[in-house]
Length: 154
Image (cartoon, one colour):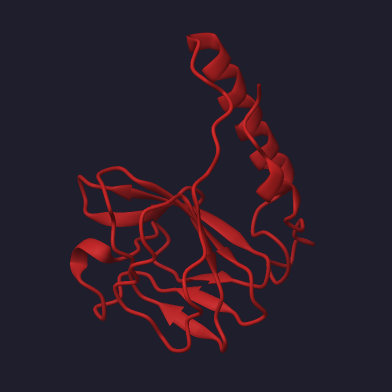
């Protein structure tokens, strides 16, 4: 059985301008998920994996050292445009998908000194990441460097 894509199928594809929908083309993620499905089947691993979804309280201001709890898919609601400067990791090499489910923009800040070093986001481009409404981004906590890294940079 393939990965559960229920949450993913509700996302809107970006028009290319980076201001609506997902930041990347959904076809790229489809290909990635297909490859994961094939790899899991190839090693005999269970393929009915479900993401643990978190729906923490809405963010009402810029947030440092964000701690949404243990889980994979974090549905973030912001009542006003905010900056997210860092996120607490609950384990080495953890994966988190941040999904903006509200109308306000969420800006993921690159290397902000407002969060502890071990909780910061790092992009190779050295730029912030803007999560518009219905946008999502996958991050991996790279324990060797102590930073959250986006799967796709920019």
